[in-house]
Amino acid sequence: MATAKLKSPPDRSEEAVFWRLLAKHACERSSKVAIDKTLRLMGRLVKADRVWIARYSDDLTRFWNVHEWANRGVEPHVMDLQGASSQMMSWGHQRLVNREVIEIPDVDKMPRSAKGLRAELKRQKVGATLVFPLVYRGRLIGFHGYDHPRPVKGWSAHRVEFKKKVAMHLAGLLARERVPSVSGIDASADIGAGGQPANLSRVINVKSAKTRVSITEDEIVMLRSFGDYTWIHLINGKRFMELRSLRSWIALLGRDDFVRVHQRFVVRADRILGVEKATGAGWNLALKGWADRIPVGRTYRHLIRSKMGF
Image (cartoon, rainbow, N blue to C red; front, top):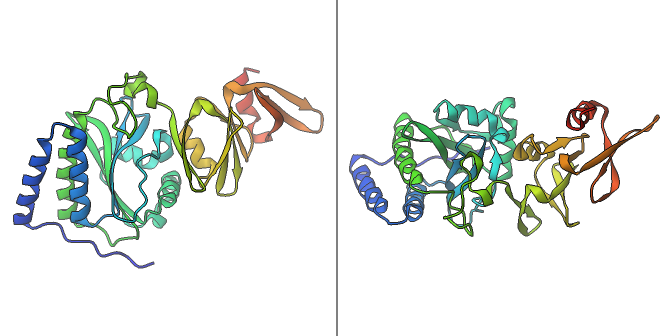
């Protein structure tokens, strides 16, 4: 696969103009407007596909995509990964906690330990990405990145240092926002446990065929694997199929409310009514509001015992 040639970082005269523009944007009354203008400026300057910001909960266990600039013709993903578990990108998350810059010049060459993050980047058709921790007054509050459609040769030390300074600027702007700023969400929303807004804590955006829907974790009864796709079954009987693996869904949801019971099935723990143990026929789960029985794989029985206390 061909590698992309990146635009050189601005020289000192251009950099002076750039910082004057950032200072002007920072004077906006709305930090959201200031951030969006900065992302647009950076995206055009470095010729990125997307430039974005994600914000952590106070306990760093979840994150939200909160700001994004997408180049013309590029699909936006700002509504994806709302309240996602940090476990889904544990490889990258640990580096951000350590205040490291994450350089991924070729997504296909990411290590096996990063397979969860790699799967999500490939789903978003990202070929390379450069990600910076957003630290404000010594506290990690989010992360900020630049996506490219194809692998790149890498980034010079000058380029990385320049973007690191921009990340420091963005961290200050992000800290001015009371809650994650997502389209359609009231910015004055109440803050829930862990520093996340109460009405955003478990919202997931699903892209099924040509439809994009927002659902909450509480609406999900079961997930069923279908190759690289996953069927999402809801309490109201609706279902959606999305190009996201069951493994990615498990990481996205976290481990508290859902349990994997089979190679192909994940169920909501509080919907389990009981276990049917038929001699020679294995285990099957009965779920509240679900007519069919769900098979339990032998290797997953210990998880059921743990959840149900037997």
